[in-house]
Image 1 (cartoon, one colour):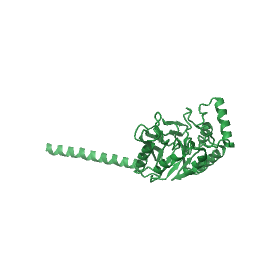
Image 2 (cartoon, rainbow, N blue to C red):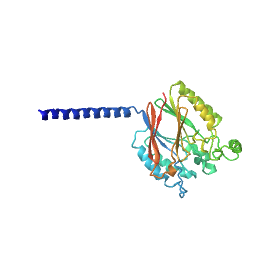
Image 3 (cartoon, rainbow, N blue to C red):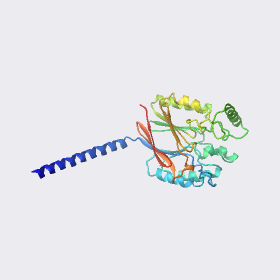
Image 4 (cartoon, rainbow, N blue to C red):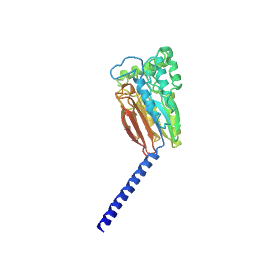
Length: 309
């Protein structure tokens, strides 16, 4: 009789353990099943056929980029985004990284950065067209999420032809900022102009009225104010903080990467691939109703960004 009781006791323990495991497995399935979609992110590939300088391994960026695209292609991605500085110099450099990104199974969008314009003067007008971003800024949507790709080269000394009116206006703004001692008063930073600012404000109002969520992409961060931020970061911060629809500002430019939250907006800077110490540096962002989850590869860290109700 004691043996029978022992058998029944052990059977009950095993049955309860099986039920618990099944319940846990179901919970994990539910967590994964509420994912809406995913997208890939890279920043600062800065390819050039030149020797390594410090941590910047320009030539080997191609191999790192190739590994990134291979990883992306193992996932069902809605799109991938390059956050600027795809090359470091020379217009001829564009073809090798864009050829690699053409192998992506997901469509690839391009933001422009300062190094995109470190090309021969006669090719500056070809840069945006080559990246299928002729205007510099645009929007697209996936489900109820609106993505705004912004152009921080809009007001800059490097993207304009020297001697042009746009160049002279940008130079005057840079000199005034330098005079006032702003730490981001450098000729490799830039700003968003009045026309683009009005477009951005209009897009945010449309999204707010439609109860859509907005994620913004730009080469330049708004925060921290460590000298890498957009020239008119304060103006842009004031704008986006007035809209509850804005979830995140995702950028490159600061190769070490960064994260902080200001108001309800997440500010995430992606690590620069050109300085990656591991075999690559990129991320896949999973979008859920209540959070954004970045899965980092290589040097890129993981993040979970909660979405406020």
